[in-house]
Length: 100
Image 1 (cartoon, one colour):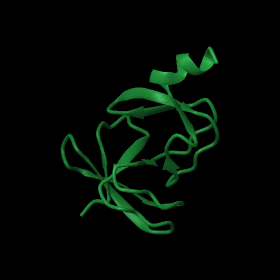
Image 2 (cartoon, rainbow, N blue to C red):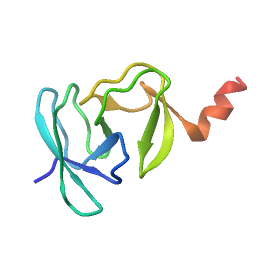
Image 3 (cartoon, rainbow, N blue to C red):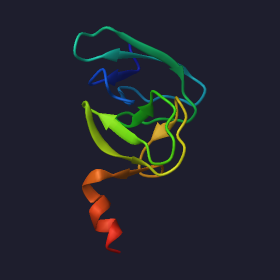
Image 4 (cartoon, rainbow, N blue to C red):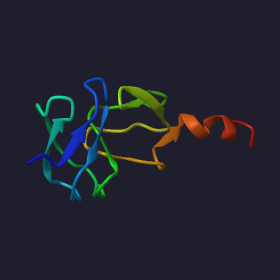
């Protein structure tokens, strides 16, 4: 049974479908065809519904979910790391932060 789902083959994050513990070896599945996804080691605890990095990302790299850009990495993110507001900036709210 997969631990996280990947919405699109171009995504660089998956979504945890169970609580994931740091150090746990977890397996993903692609929603489109339920094919097996990557098996990766979680770096952090990742709560149900939160994102897990499928690739290493550099600061400024685009975070892709649903096959679409959802934000940018604001720091380096490693494979298996929890991806959330502490390490990405949303595209939706980014324009508001620039004016602050």
